[in-house]
Image (cartoon, rainbow over all chains, first blue to last red; front, side, top):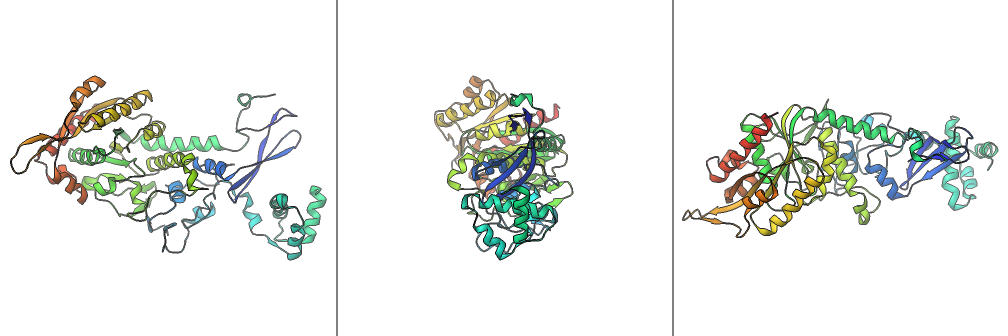
Length: 183
Length: 296
């Protein structure tokens, strides 16, 4: 799939991938000529098709581990399948608590235990945002944003904060976002 | 306005490069396997897996280094047939170390990953009711990983045991484009012949690999009390079918209840009962395959 800025007749470049959130990936492309940006938002089935290719939009930050795909995607797997890896069962009643597959898999969001089936589809650009905390007052401000656009607004604010090294989102941060991004 | 084909590159999504890397890894791994043979039928219950396990053992006895890929992800049986069921997998520096069955046969099967005897293969996904849309992609990527990420080492022969139906043929054509050929299995019934012919056509239509020969399983039955030999299935002439389809008839294997018992114990029949007619027939077929391998 390729994206073309019709105005400039120029190929758009991938800028960022985030998610999946509730089964949806957000992939942002920008035109290098006019800076126009668009976002591709996938539904859960489209996300699953991407996952089925065993690829990460935007590229992997480290090579895949052996049998990573099958170990990650199999809904119910035997405990201790892989000796010495801290590998545990998934999805079966009575299985032990999740431990991590390995440090590298952990870094890729590939813990072996019960987990979001869509993780590891996108790269880790959203990782920093997930470490942010929201002040209650800032959360209340966000609540005033209409439902249908709130997730995107939250994502934009978190991205803005993460890029500037903030660890806490306050009303002042929201004001700054509004001033910078114009909403 | 530019079209898709006017634009070079993928704008940074890197999907094509990742798929290319997967393919390169697979090709690199398979370069260490001299011959690859798929055991196919199209028809279920004809004994593909039992034949695969016994041919693997017979060829290992001849000194070949053998690997077995259980390509039947939803009905895996090779781990049981080759006595490695329940074994733990080990991760080595070069990939997953496959458990070794009799005579050092390396086995990879989905059964090694499943949680219990009653656990079916199910995938994480948005809704199982719609899994038909994406299940094939899950399966083909699993097979790719089984082939590419397993530390098979140097092999003289990799046997791939395919499930019934023709779907897996299309899955494997991309994964094993340099397949040596397909070994076709049937029982001597008209119903089986009808279905097996379709599988042969599917292999040929895919222009994947030659059909190396036809094996008749459960061709006859010898009464252990009176010694009389009888046909198991009246009607189907497998030798004539092979001729009509333009492929060699490799032999007929008699039904022997001890073969089923040995399979349940995870012991290849050719090792436990080498002097029986069924084991001798299996050994003859194995020697034919050995000829293909050594012709490289």
